[in-house]
Length: 137
Image (cartoon, rainbow, N blue to C red; front, top):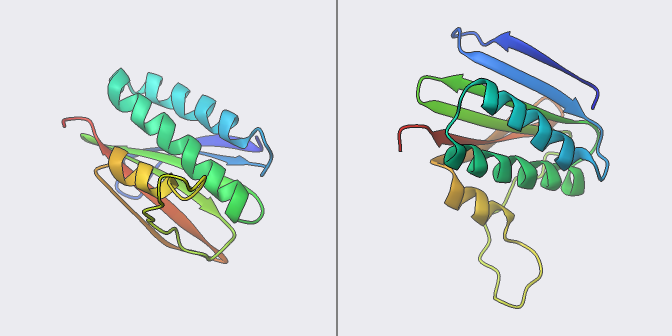
């Protein structure tokens, strides 16, 4: 971990962030950060579990397919939590339908199944991949 900060976003919503080195420990460190934040925001366990799984998958993808430091941000606005993971690669995430024998390619299908919505957008020399979760679902 290279540091974390709690701030308010431009709309006044609580936002927390952390930067991680792209190591084998990045997903573990992201889960610890996200777990602490969600506990502090009193997010129900069922939703928190989905967000933790999504954080682990998105950070693993960023380490494996991205370059450089990985950023993780959480933003809470009303009944919505948005998880964002940033890296320094411009490759877009791909939603695949691998056959049953394929050992890879299920990550974004998992994000699609867990979240209310997801997407990506440019971030300087890289990208953000985000997933949104509803607390009132």
